[in-house]
Length: 219
Image (cartoon, helix red, strand yellow):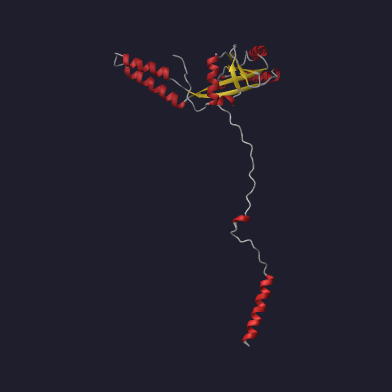
């Protein structure tokens, strides 16, 4: 009885061993592991300086700017006006003039409104100098009030300038297009000539909007 039981168990174990395949690979055999191929990704070249990212390369003899693509650019300022104080006839005339500008001038043109914070350091220094030199006690409160007004303007007011960027393939064509724009805007928004220093200041403010301007206002 016991022998038959042992034989029966051995036959069942033998059958079970035949049905379950055995392999020589274990789950923790590191020799059978394969590593994925390493991809050689193309590295992005980082420019060495910010100057290589800017479109302007250098200034020219005629106070313009040379671009990276070989073209030239210049900047002029438009005279702004109080549109709420104009009559309906004056408004219609200005609208017609600007619409005619967009139709007659077929070359690349860019109008940029620029808000810049006030920098009235020169005016404040002048008032502080007057406070130190003042001998009249009755005049001192007036100077202190003027200084507080300048501080308030710096904190709560900004300048709104309208700048016109125009482009040309060479400097001679740039002068011709500037003359054309002057004629087209003579009645509605006369142009204001900018010095090279002012143009450089405009470019600085465009690329550094959170930076306080170097100077503003006149003494």
